[in-house]
Length: 231
Image (tube, rainbow, N blue to C red; front, side):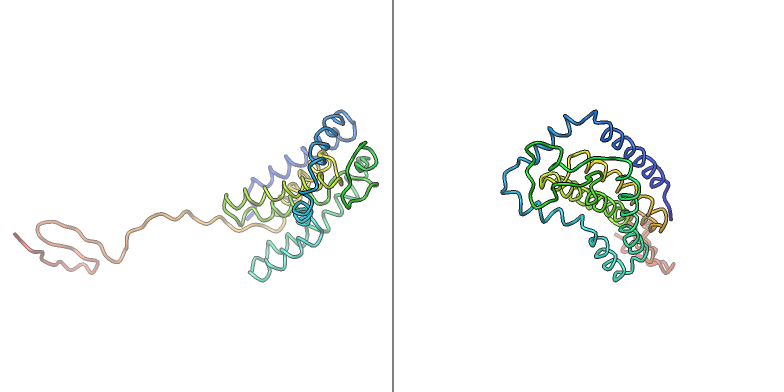
């Protein structure tokens, strides 16, 4: 099935991505962008190892790993969506967004940026890691209950913040990547389809046996009356 909510989600996030592109390209929020960047980037080096590991959720091979797991568990539509995520991400990132938005990496344009094993130069908008993690989270969301969805998107946010901490991107870069990733995930869910939601389970009585009390008789599922004890 193809729920209408994914149409609206894709449309809304395409619009949000366009808005972030304009803000980034125009420079109207550069001061705020750099202020938040320094807040995150200046966190002590004790956070390096866990945040470096967290950002690995956004590597290009992550959707492939999830696709294999989905295929082995017979989630064929999820596997197809994950396999399509990597090439569509590359197309959107390099042939559209980086062409339209000229935004250099913090190592080039942000004075005092701390770089932790990331490139100092090159185009930074959008964050490719953010596209991947938010795209995967959106693709996985129809298969999970609400608690798992919250945890999944929380992990996506942590991975995106890790890219700012490492000095690879400013907040606008990861915000644009996040909205683009959600839009991609929603569009791919529309392309491959998602499973129908399971019906809510309610308490049911055993249909094989029901007891009616009246006039000293008990009626059982077999339809035969049995006399009860009389006082």
